[in-house]
Every structure is written in structure tokens, then in C-alpha cells.
Image 1 (tube, rainbow, N blue to C red):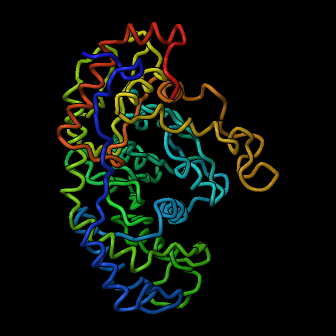
Image 2 (image 1 turned 90 degrees about the horizontal axis):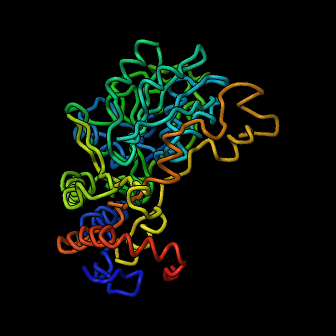
Image 3 (image 1 turned 60 degrees about the vertical axis):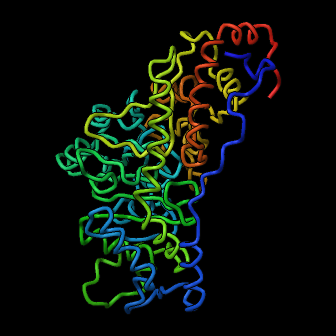
Length: 431
């Protein structure tokens, strides 16, 4: 192969990758229809049929239930809001412990704190990057109230096993399924196996409406509590079939009609949108499978990976080159990627300093979970030295560019000796 681009050669991917964009005529028409009818939000925070939102919101929820084969879908204005609402719906109270993975977006761990819950970080599996059920079992204490499983990068956690564990211990399982729409475990959709599942419709996800989220559940009472928390539930005291409003702190987490209309246009094409991402990820995996020093994303048996992110594991010792230099070399070849994902969440100041709300250490107190460095060694290793991530939902390479991306990986690996020598001598071109 030709000289590495980072050392002065021509890049393998000749043209910039197109941006992944699913917004088109259907979404434009949906927005115009809402603007024409003039109802930008159908919610009222008071008793009546409008308590559950406008026609587009209610239609979106019905269509979501049909697509994901679930009993209830409750729309919210973001997946973060959905996680907060889920914590309220299951009754998290000050001092309750909630087991969460250390490798995930911060909202997963911050949501319990909204109700005074205390996150307990547990390490992930080496292969799927999701919660390790054995370590979850070992972390359960008398104070544990719930487990939040994240279907990270679009691969399902061991959801059926975690649900069985939760049920056996009288705990709730909440799924953070922001990255895994249409992912499956043993034929069941991720986001529908836990007591509550939370999906994202954020602009960076497979299906998007700018900002938005959906909570799913099979439980009538949990659905009612989610609806109450979403829309100032304390204001509907006296309505027929009310739940215990004295313990239902309400917010405004409502979705607009415009947002719901865009989301409906997106989910009408969910299969084609998401399967397109999966095809690209699997083409990349197939092209570089068996490459020296690189492990492609794992797909556990009887699981369907949604591939929000395509994450490689690099063995720097085998390659003889650091991850940082590999990332720079691939970027020079026209293959965009980034190192790690997010740092282990216990490195965030609120956990490191044990102070989330106020100045007195709430909700952590003077005892409780350990947030010290070294707590989750698999997470730390993956983030700090091994994981190299390509954003499947950011770029839309042509089939020719996909092959060029594969060729770029092979080129960099083949020339790793030259890359190592340049790294050692400081001869690499600047970023």
C-alpha cells in the first residue's frame, strides 16, 4: 500500500464522508401540518383529556407501542427527562442505592440524584461494554432499590438475566436504551424487558426529532406515574383513578406537537433508517475482522446490535503503536474516530468530591459507595487505552467509501512499523 497520509502520503478515503441526515420531505410536511393547525402543544397541566397531550403526541405514543410491541409509551422532552421520571415513578427516595454502569453518559447516573438516590457504579463486560450481571449481584445491598442497565453503543445488556435478578431481589430494572432502538435480546426488543425502558430521540441518535424521549412500560401504575411526573401531576388531584399524588413530584417534561410530528415521520421509516446503520457497521466489521491487534465489535448470540457507535478495541502492545497515534493515522487517511467514550463517571467532580446538591455532601453523606480510582478496572482500561470509536449515526459513507475505510485500517496496520518509528522520533505531522 502507499505511504501513510500522516507521513505525507495520499489519504485512502479521498472525499469527506457525507453527514448522516434523515430529515426530509416527510418531516417538513409533518411540521407544516402542525403549523397550519396552530396547535404547537396540546398539554394542559390540569384535569381533562389534554392532560395527556395533543393529537400528535398521543398518536406518536400509540405508534411507538405498536413498533416496539409494548403496552405503554409515555413521551417526554428528552431521554434524560425520561430517566428522571423513571426514578420518580419507581419511588426512589433519599438514601436509596441505584446500581449503574460506570461507562455511560452522565445522565444515567445523575437521574437518581434528582430524588436523593445514590449511584453505585459497577463495571462493564469486556466484550459488550454493558453491565456485568455477576458484578451487579455482588453490589446489591439492603439499600439497593433499582438497577439501571445501559444498552451501550446499541448492544443489549444481559437484560433477561438482569430482570430475573431484579425480580428475585424485589428491585426495579430500568433500561437506558437511548442508543439501542430495534436492538433485541432473544427476540425481545431492548427497552421493553425492564420495568421501564427509556429511549432517546436526540438529534445524534438513529431516530431523532431534535430533542425528545419515550418511556415504555408494561405496568399500568408505572405508566400513570410517568404521565403524572411529566405534567405537573400534583395539579390533577381529584381526578378519577388518581395515584398517590402526595408522592408524585411533577415537572414539565412535555413534548411539543411539532416535535412529536417529526418523531412520527421518523419512526414510520425506523426499519430502513436503523437497518442502514447496521449494514454499514457490519460491512466495516467484516472488512477488518482478523486484523492484527484490533478486535471488532462483539455481537452476543441471540442478540441484535443496533450500532449507534462502532467501537474497536486496540491492543497497543501487539500493534506496537499507541491508540492516540492509531487514531491520528486513521484520521489522516479520512477515517474519523475518537479515543474512548466518556470517562468513568466516578471521575466527575460531583462523585469525586461527594457533593452533588448543596454544600453538605447530599445525597452521599459521609459513608456509602466507593468512588475511588480503580473502582471499575475494565471501564478504565477500555476508556483510557483500548476503545476507538466511529460514530455510525454521524456519517453516511457510500459503499465505495466504506471499502476505503476498511482499506484505511489495513493500510495503517500494515505500515505500523513506520508509524511506530515516526512516533518514537517525533516525526509525525501535527494534527
